[in-house]
Amino acid sequence: MSSVIITAADKTLEKAPDKVPEIATRMRSQDRRELILGAATAVFGERGYFGATTDAVAKVAGVSQPYVVRMFGTKEALFLEVLERALDTLMKTFARALTDTSPPPAGLEDTPSLRIGRAYADLLVDRGLLLSLMQSFMLGADPVIGPVARAGFIRVYTFLREEVGMTPLEADVFLAHGMMMNTMVGLRMADLYADGDPCAIDLLETALPGKLDVLLDSSKPA
Amino acid sequence: MSSVIITAADKTLEKAPDKVPEIATRMRSQDRRELILGAATAVFGERGYFGATTDAVAKVAGVSQPYVVRMFGTKEALFLEVLERALDTLMKTFARALTDTSPPPAGLEDTPSLRIGRAYADLLVDRGLLLSLMQSFMLGADPVIGPVARAGFIRVYTFLREEVGMTPLEADVFLAHGMMMNTMVGLRMADLYADGDPCAIDLLETALPGKLDVLLDSSKPA
DNA sequence: GTCTATAGGGCGATAGAC
DNA sequence: GTCTATCGCCCTATAGAC
Image (tube, rainbow over the protein chains, first blue to last red):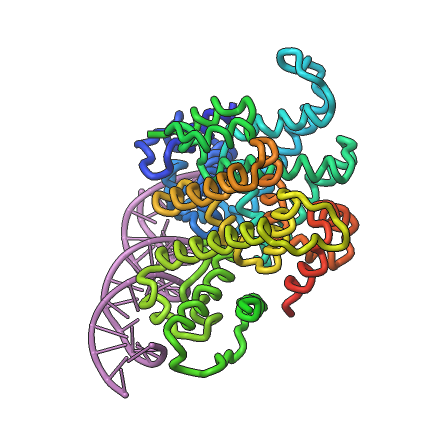
């Protein structure tokens, strides 16, 4: 389960504990790659493309900074791979939710739209994944990242329209609430919720119905 | 009209033309301050807090880089002032829309919610303003910016609830569509629209009804 | 009040040992 | 395959002239 990697990488990026990966040195190259991509997803999601440093990624992954650069060429190439991987995971999760034959939880309704709505909310547990995508959406003016980000968003929109069968209005409403959830996670609004702020409680209970428990778990690192 | 400043600062940040401010050197200190804040709003909105450089702000404002730092102390303090100013403008625009006695355009409905919905859409013309706020929303993990960003979002939410009289659900839907519009602007989705991409056309005509003309105007710098 | 010059630090990337 | 050492750039901030 990749959730192990993600949770570990997610526990405050600042003080990465001594971090002895399972097999110590010389694990399979493919595994190292995934390990670094997971770390990079967390760091890019938290600080954005420019705020993230290859050194922070390296520390979270438990490798040296030059190794990160060596493996992906440049920081930019690393970010683009993070985006591609995140989008692939998103689309696979949507596709699985659509074809999944298991019954919906606790006698809830079962329409295609509701299924992928729940699937999206499930992805919020891995904060880095959706936040990295969201960070790219804010860099549309960048000559390299911009076109990739636009293409990624269009890919999701096309899926909603053609595979899920949403109307333009349904897709708009779905995406709007997705952006809202991303924003709540990026803002760490759950911190205020945990502090008992009545306003944040109202806000989150409406914006993230039923997902507050997992968000609180994953947002209290210290 | 501040739109003059904003439009000028917005026309591609890369090649700031020779930029002789109206009165050349020694304009009133207050005016210089506003000029720099306007430039900073555009640059922070486009590249985010970490991606923006004080030098880029200085170039857009037509002053020297050390002068920008001198006037605001640090880059961080400059960003916080940009956020405060943007939020003030946002709230003032909302408040004005609520109390405005002029009739709604072209026989549209006239409810408090619809009024501030139109007011929000009007603010999209100044891309930097809403994008700077949005960039701050993605930095909730930052120890300094995070709390300010959360407080700003809460301030808007409280206004919607208490001044406009929205229910939690109405506020959620309003904010969700706001985040969606911000995302479309940050992504520069209008570029694909202008290229005739049918998918982007569907998307934007639903997400930004009636605001496409202004967005296209302000997004074609070259 | 505004500039030029520059110090100082951090970061991405390279070289090369093991 | 992975590390240590380090280069060179860019960026924030300071010093000081005008």
